[in-house]
Image 1 (cartoon, rainbow, N blue to C red):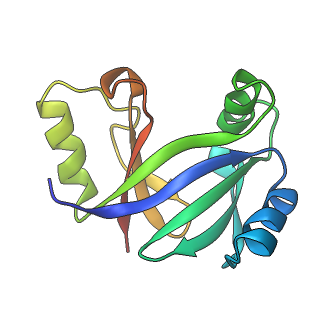
Image 2 (cartoon, one colour):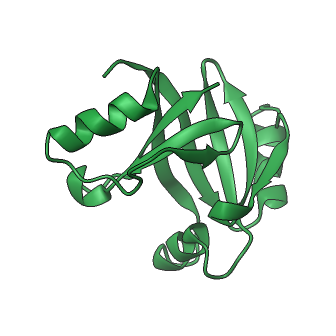
Length: 136
C-alpha cells in the first residue's frame, strides 16, 4: 500500500458555523465550502492547510456517528479520525484484511469531497479511527 499523505483530519464539532468562526477569524483559514453527506449523517466544512485539510464534522442527526462521538466526549468535539490518502482504495482494503486487521468498511463508500473512503476498525488500530481516502 502506498500512503501518499495525510488527506485530512476529521474534527467533530457541535456547531459547524460556530466552529468556523475560530478557524477563520483566529487562525486565518478559509472554508472552501460545506457539504451534507446524508449516508453518514454529517455536514462537513473543508479548511485546506497546505497539502491536507481540516474536515469539520457536524452531526445532522441525534443518532449519527458524530453525535455519538460528541456525547461520548462529554458534549465536546475533538479529533474524530485521521484520513490517509491512497492511490487504490480497493487494494488498500484487501491488503489490510490480508494482514489480519479488521475494516469497518469492506468496500469503499462515498465520502465528502467526492472521495472514496473506507474506515479501519479502531480495535485493529490501537483505538484510532483511520480512514483510507482515494480522491478522484
